[in-house]
Length: 95
Length: 484
Image 1 (cartoon, chains in turn red, purple):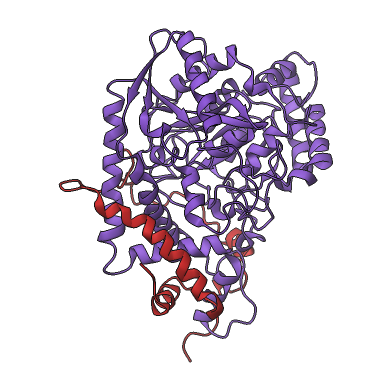
Image 2: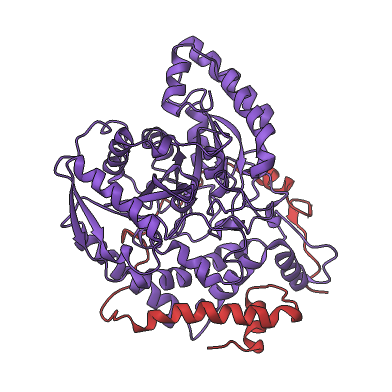
């Protein structure tokens, strides 16, 4: 099974990765060999089985909807690449 | 001093044979002098360590020292440490200084342990050879042209080279056990949910589990006593009392039923490794255990299932690294899309990008059921194999990995060959079971690991089985040439 260039480009868009044109062939080849490996799964008989979401089949615990953590905005924003007025800055999205 | 175990160090500290400051200075000096050869640490936290050692000495003098007071350890650089760079082996987080401690780090801090530094690892824990680290590969102290295993290769190598007596590590598909095996030390991956994942940078959330590494099982028990805790900040953590893992270290193995999965002794297993493992099993028989042949028929499906689930979950987890809130950001982004795409392309290494793309593929529209859904069902098959096996046996044993440490670059061009390195360890992660590795022999002057798999929350029995073996063998006491 081989993956087409177009598929790699779509995946890169979905994953928000810039993929260099020169690397597409190599990536395609490597992804194909991994997909060949994982295609072995298709032969397994899993009829009637539910998927295992928690390894111990536990359900996710919920907590009360209450404020229980201190606000650490200053500490978190101190390590951000760019902030202003307590906001994270990114390139302009709308004019 | 560096040849003492944690148990012996605690004794020496209690009896004032030496102070924590002296031990800490000794290990810091060893790291400074020797680690340029192994590259096992990314960050050395010398000042904090000396300060923590001084506090520990005061607590010991005052007679109210907590369990691990004054014991130097190193943390895998995947655990967030307040005020200390936490890189996860990636350029993406090269500048990341967390404003908080992971629960595991906090547990050790409040137990009086002294952090010497942060250990090298495969980038975002994705690798079995430590070759994917942004900070360069870690070298195996037993043979510096060979890999230490991964992803916790820095933690394992640091212990093997006697640069620290104990370490934290994490295991998603074998990342504690495989490097422990390849570096000739003891390491334990607990039951999923036993150790908090809060502040531990996520790779594959349904598989990741933190655990201890040390030279002996007795020391791993001490570390696990501190490391394991219920934490309401980790919603997958299991609310269950933490037993004293040191309490059962004297139990007899008479009548212990050890399952030997025939699938773990098949094609692909190095003959020297097999001999060493079989000899160890014979040792267990001498200790009174009974060997029972068992079958885990779906073992072959574990690697394919893992390489759907782990990349899928990591592609979702790693979407948070976007250049906006912390970590690497590309220069002069022309728009938001460009900011995301270039930041991620520059910040992530090749293997991480490859896994993100595979994960994205497996989760994308039209493929989700065929890949992720199917792999989650296969996981039930693998879990059922183990549940059936544990109706007949108390523990399962076999090799940790197919062969001893391989040379750098040996599997570099073939991701699938690298993935098969984890063939014996992955299924326990998929099932959420605890597994450990301990030294059990040497092949070509390189260590071989024996793997012990236990039932859910049966870490105490596993640690005792390993401890009893270490009472009658000395593989765990061997040191690499030049390290004595």
